[in-house]
Length: 234
Image (tube, rainbow, N blue to C red; front, side, top):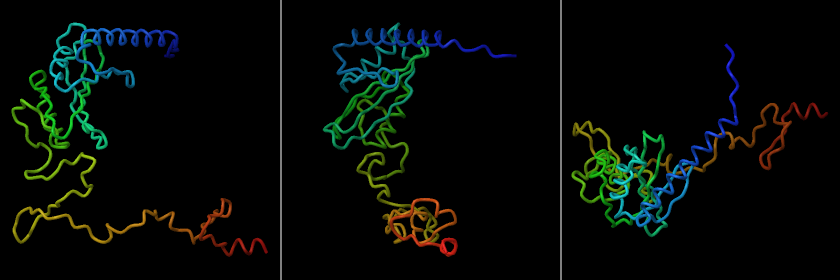
């Protein structure tokens, strides 16, 4: 059975129609939410709306219930940390419309002391997602029925996905044979892990010439001719 060749012109026409319908939907959303939008942009064929944090629930409800939008599924809630920004945290909501086979992204920003309205009144699935954002970034949500850590342990210090959180953390845990339980201790790195020169083993072999190296460019430092090379030249 021979596969029929793909008509590239028809494919381009379908892509153009899809993009046109997306642009039409974007204009419709902008017209209905003009009092709530800070800006809108396209990111990899996905519409991205920047909104004020106090309007997040209203915008989510409109996108979910409007007959032309039908973004009925909240895929994820996450955040990004920009320590240099005045409002260092960008909270991101990704929505999916199964009816239109399309996606949309909402963004809002917050400072460390700001409280973001919870989206659980619109999407009940936002509960655990907002707990993850709270645990990893320290962003607080108002009107959340159970805002507590979900990924880290009880008594954990700090928020791991903040850019200023140390890669080693603050404490380490191990099982103590003496106490017969897991104990927490301050992080202690051995000298082998604290002192290194960022040089890979292969880059460190500058005083060794492997067979075939004579065909390549001589390294700037450490190059020594092999005995076979010397004999060949003689």
